[in-house]
Image: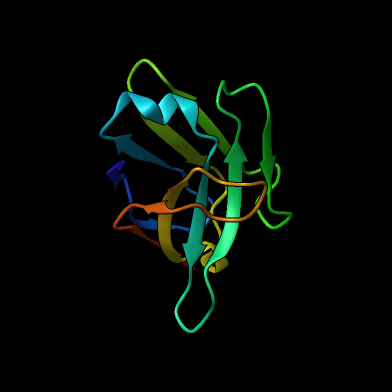
Length: 119
């Protein structure tokens, strides 16, 4: 069992920056490919970004490519999502998840952190 705790969400304006963090409870975090997902009001949860166990490969949803960066620090059991040039359509609850299989979520979810982008 791995517990995941997200932080870093908030209210920002269009074009601003936020950095999300996800702290994992166990060292086995480093054995898992990890990802970020998001769910906007009235919409299904969707894949945002993924990263391999060692962090060497990252991949993104087309809607965030070039603006968001996923990374991880396995020594700190922490996953990150840097979000630049935020848009109102990025407003959602963001969740970290693992172990992911490509763009499919795994068993472990955090509680989510709200990101709101005002226009």
